[in-house]
Amino acid sequence: MLNVISTIPPSLEKFLGEFKDLFIKPQFENFKIYPFGLQLELKRTNIQTINECRPKSNYDSLHHFLTNSP
Image (cartoon, rainbow, N blue to C red):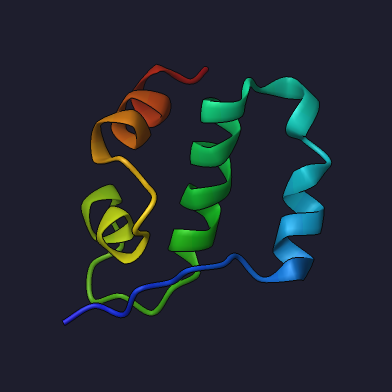
């Protein structure tokens, strides 16, 4: 069973906010979710398990962001 994470820690939110101007809003949301998810203590750290921990995230959107980002 996975824990649901509702908020990104303020220190990480502040750091990632420095990059906000580089993305449109949906891209920036995915940009925030991925590094946050990598820090979670998950049995498997992949976009599927990261997505399952975030109620507002969308797997297809996160997958598209990661596969099509330069």
